[in-house]
Image (tube, rainbow, N blue to C red; front, side):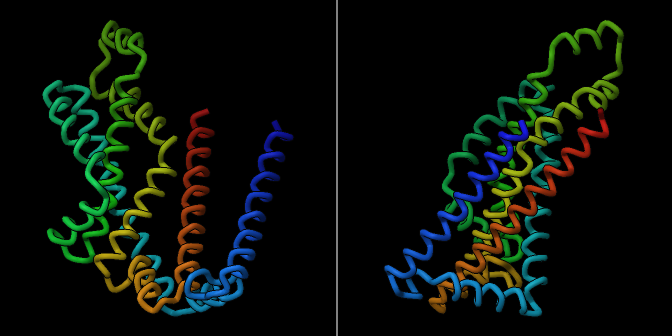
Length: 251
């Protein structure tokens, strides 16, 4: 197992080195900073962005929008998922809604959000719409896939419904959700940034990406992409750490 992990890490390092080599080759071949910037110009743009006094404010506003949208999606997914598992009417009512949300183009959602909401709330709405179906289907699957023997045993011993929900349904729901939390939060984060790029709130990563594009500062765009990737990685490691601690505490 240890040798397998070391091999994976080695391959990951090799992959990153290949990306850097390809970046150097492409930037030298194209030789145009507007089309494809060099690593050095991207690094200078990166340091300039990070040193700005507004940098922390910008990323904190984008993070707050991401987390608010994600928490609303999660709460509604859990509530409606439980109700759908109990009520056949709600279950069938949700099918066309979920199909619509998963089929509608992302750009259409962003445009509608810009029409309906102000520039601060539009990105949150975009993130919510994209993540809610994923969370809802995971919650519903977690309930419907429960071992029927456990439910039958609970009925035999006349276990109260609230006890069953608290001790059986909820832990199983969050166990299933824990597997998709990193990817779902990552999708939400990216969609919030996409919404910000068009809605242009005052403090936002998406707004700054759009500004770099307007000024044809491609190295600045690359720098913000690196920042987004780093933040996504941090999300992933934090959530994996929380999941690990939760599982360990149960054991």
